[in-house]
Length: 352
Image (cartoon, rainbow, N blue to C red; front, side, top):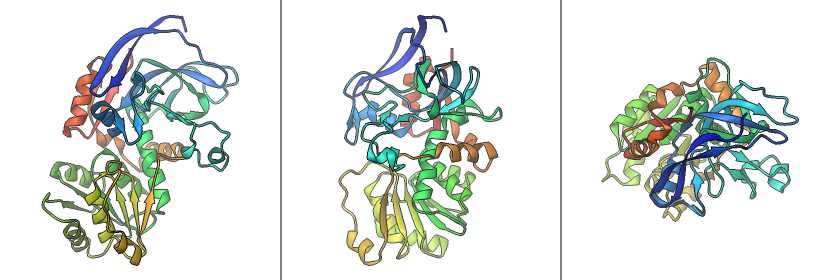
């Protein structure tokens, strides 16, 4: 690649301070790395949190940071020692680069690596830019029939794969999905692919529940804002005629976690995917005496290959989630749309 290519990037400086900046890119891939021309980047809820609040949980914007961690692109050049990819290959990017040396990496739990460099989590740059360099081992070649937009969705689908593995969703499972946003919808689709026979989605928005139905929900439950968590739980049980075996909580609302605890069968599991209630008051005694396990989940580990197989085989249809697309020059409009709640999934086209 010739030096000093022009590049545009969506850079977050702090709370509500996202700027589209022009510059130059001249870096070349090092050993084990590839140079990627970024094509598609999905806007995640965490990107919105960083933009609106300047932080998400304990992760705070500490330096100007390029946002976006759901990405795909095309390999432009390869560095020394790269054998799994060639220039021209279309790839999805796994955004977390672990250290490979700590106890978590060595035990196969690299998602807990304390030294991980995760794209778009300050100060690590993400992929809302035209070019990036990334380790080849964390790039996954896309089949010709899988689009760049679908490739970008490997990241949230990997979250769903890890979630379903954590609670052993399987043949005949009855699963409650609380929150029918993008991550709830991919969890729903992956749970169905895992063999769940009953899938009930809850949300405050009827339009999101319509999308959930199209994605494979067998039942839906529109939540009244005035309803208590117990009332929501009873409505869920009435709707499916049983208690769910598993709840996958995707809204981040404390009330939804509580509803999941009340609804889930004794001996079942509540998995907390959504992040939004760092200090929540929950019915812990109810969970304890009925042995309802509360399980955390963080990103994913070794899930991109399975996510790619699900998309490439057609077992899940992520195209159904792709509702809006913007050029990189329209990135502020893209973030406004994603924040509005009117979109299912917003994709930014970063190609020249």
